[in-house]
Length: 511
Image 1 (cartoon, rainbow, N blue to C red):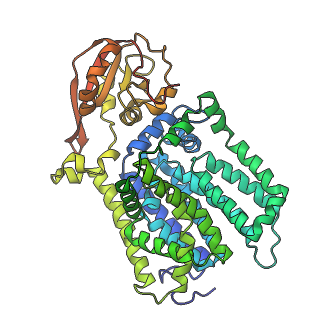
Image 2 (cartoon, helix red, strand yellow):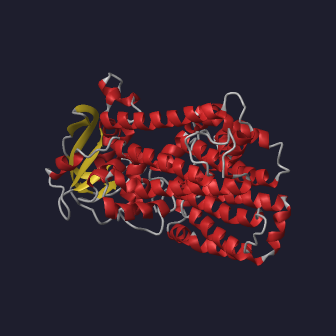
Image 3 (cartoon, one colour):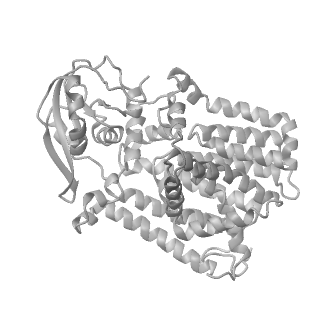
């Protein structure tokens, strides 16, 4: 197959769209491997790896699938950067599934453009593409399910897809998406909207979708069983994050700006423009399909910031994911647009490479701090691993099967501590917000125990007064400064304490 001039984003790509998409996927996967090797684990990743040491049906913050993957990966790679490999490879699969979905709806070269734009976006390059977060499995299984249904909804000439195969496979995939992240429900709700709004509503009279729903319910059942056993703590926690605080325009503005930055401005502008343009083209079932999948997630989480007072800009990203095929279709249909799509492709790819390698190098070297930037202003500091703690605590008797218990004062600091020493000692968190730590701590197990409190100096200063009643004796804090390249960047305190009385004050996560 010979490419039409202007179809290919880069002239050096193969003339076959499938091979061109594969080449892009391999190139971006190699970029992610370099990024993963350079950058340490962020706060969320550190906490996730700590929680994943112990297998459970589900977990407090999120459903379990990415933690199960992390547990298996740690068994092979330990806590090195290579523990990210399963998620990196999974996103390569997600990219291929996006190509397959776009190719079915619009064409092969449209799929190539969609893959390029997706992988050049900052969020999809870094978070679900590289890090140990629930969005990676979520997107893989949502896309796989939609590919299965697209074969049924939009068959090619001569195809006779099996309804039972499509719906059962989609049900399994949607169940596994729900086993990854609760927000999968918004994309599935978009699918329901598409069915009701189009002649495809005839499938609602067929038994296959309901059989698929049973498969989905079975796949997601570990989450339900865990929540029942723990007073619905995880669902109550996530639902409570959207609590009302009245009209908050500032939070809404921050939410819009955050999405703009996370997607990358050079991706966000054309993506949002294409989404708006396709609102006028919904008679085309292919476009309605994608917009229905995208809209509920984008609209709910963006508008939620108006009444919740805050929201995280990555929450709407699974919705934006399904706009990329529309962007790919526009690029092929408008090769003479200004600015040139090919010029846009070159700049987008170059910026993705520069940002991934640049941020990775800054995180590995701490260069910003060396140049005089205050540590608190260094965005890579959260990805600095506290590995220097391990020998220091070992010298104080923290060893496997004996010695004092290691205690953090907040879930995020506890995650960093757990990543550094968790396989050599029990790590728990006392304080107002232990999150998942509260569900692996047995209240009576450590009563009367000796502990070593490890905390940021600022956290210790804020909480030390409240801790006085929880121990028989609290010793003098010992300061420890750790950093990169021999330069101190973080001030910690290590405080010996004897006679632990309780894990109170209990957290919002307490059973």
